[in-house]
Structures are given as C-alpha cells and as structure tokens.
Length: 399
Image (cartoon, rainbow, N blue to C red; front, side, top):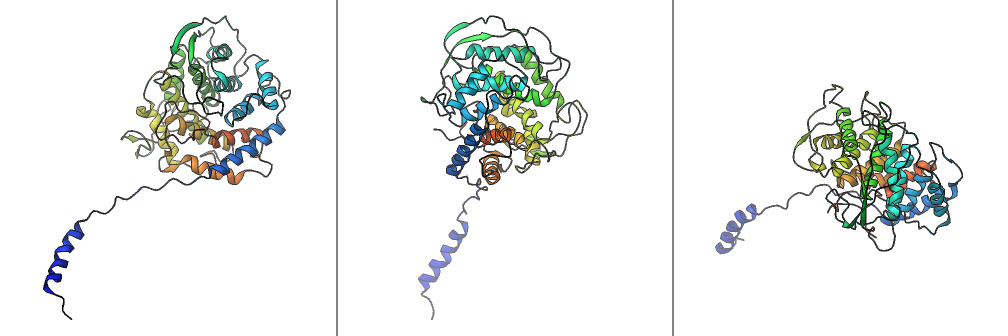
C-alpha cells in the first residue's frame, strides 16, 4: 500500500532535522557511592574500641604516647569534653609540657579544634616548641624540650585567621554553635635556638599540620621558619635537587589547565618517592602556601605531587611502599583531598574509594588492627581535615 504523497514529503523533510539534533553531552564517571549511615556506624564502633584501649597513664612522656592521636580522633568523631575517657586523656595531655614533634603537632591540632581561643596560650607553647626545633635545612626531627617565654598578647578586635579565610570558619566536630570562636588576639613567636642539621619528612609533615593549627589560632609564626620549611619541600621533591629525571608528562589531575610531572617524595633526601611521604609533602606545601597567602592551586610543585598521586593511586596499600604504614598513608591522602579542596585526585574519588575499603576492613571489635591505625581510619572516614577555604566541592558533610 502506497503512502500519501504529503506524508512521504513530511517524513523526508523531518529526517534532516532529526539528524541535526544534538546528542546529550557525555557525562564523566560518577563518584562511587558511600553509605553515610554505615560510615557513622563504623566510626562509632571505632571510638568504642579506642575507649576500651585508652589509658591516660600509659605512654607518659614517651615518644610514642598516643594521648594526642586518640584525642584528635575523638574530637573529630564528636566526643564531648564531658565524656570521662576524653576528659581523662585531655587532662593528662595538659599536665605535660609539649613533647616531641609528632605529639606537639597533634596537641596543637586538638586544642585548636576544641577551643582555639581558650587554649591560645597553650597553642603558643606548641608553636614555640615547633619553631625552636626546626632543623637547619628546614626539616624537623623528634625534637627536644625548649623554654617558654611569657607570651606577648596583641589584642585585636574581630581578627581574621589569615590566609584569605574569614572569621568563624565551620567547625567539623559536633560542638554546639557550629562555628569556632573568632580570634581576638595575636601572639607572635620568635625562634630562640637552632635545631640539628637535618631531620626527616615524617616529622616534618606533622610539623606543618601543627603550624597550620597554630596559625589558625592566631599565633604569628616567624617568616623565615615558613620559608625555610617551604624551601625544603621544594628542593627535596623528585626531579629537583637530586637530579632524577621527571616522569612522563600527564595532564594536571585537578586545578588549572597545565601539564604536570608526577614527582614524589621519600623519607629523606635520597631514594624513590612513595605514597605516605608524597601525600604528606603535598599537604605540607599547601599549608605553607596558605600561611603565606598564596594560591596553592597554582603551585606547580603541588600539582606535580598530585600527578604522582594520580599515577600511583590506590587505597589498598601504601603506593611504592606496600608493606608499611598503610593507614598512615590513607590519613595523608585525606589531608591532601581536603586541603587542596577536591573530591577527585585524577579520576579517582579518593574519599569514596577509601571509605568503602576501610569499612570492608574493619574488625569485629571495631578496630583496624591496632589503636593507632584505628585513629587514622576514623580521621579518614570523618574527613577530619578542615578545608583552608570553604570550597564548593568539599566532600565533608556539615552537621
């Protein structure tokens, strides 16, 4: 049966128009999904495990005391000062002077998170310890006791915390009010002595975390300390002072359109870069850019570090160092994502991949093998690191 001429002509005229219709733009791969209720339950079980294994008397003045790390995990998980375990650990910590670089950095982070205004002079003491223990080359080692001068308090009304960030930044514990108290005074710290010639990149990355907390609490750090620390990270990156040829050109994983060379860091000044040192170094560079008021998203060394992390990305082990410090690495990965302000490193949804992996690995007792790794897992799951700015792509849920 033949079709009417008018219908045939109508169909012929319609085909070109249909052929010219634009297809919807292809979407990039979605981020893996995370069940936030399961995350909250994993954190709850992890905190219960930590409380069972905490002992404010154990560790004492030792290098490996876990007081500060336990407290940091607990405060970010929403444990309140009224909790007897939390309060016992806090009082034990405050009864000591700052000791050792790791512990002092974590101490500053804990106090800044709890109440940066109330504990400002305590945080000043943390800054003094860190400043006095910086090595001649810009690194840190474990550090030695120092002396604490009477702080010079410079009152200022409605002082912002610096680094381009406004007063009243969102708090990521679950304290009432939702914002941190504004900084009403500044306290400058001066370097009183020189540290040893060199240190290591593990102590050094934690020193950066502690100095960021001090800076956010209104402690004015010596310019030369920040510059020397920044200089160390730049000259110790692969392909810089050690003469290692950079790896292949790859697109920058995030941030401005540019090309980046995957260049990592190792524990000291020699060797091949690996995951936990590279994420720690990248985070430290971002922090020092922030303190100096510079845009870390345009820092080529930061972008090169992210390119290394993209090229070697995994959440199931410490890249290039697979048998050691796995969850230490994951906490460093969390810091990079939050500090840089991105949900992705390359094409990888770092949080979703890491969170799903961690929930699969949690033990029946709520732990991840041991108390220290359990703290690192909780800090990752809680996305504990506060962004340096309120990024629109921040992955941290507000409460």
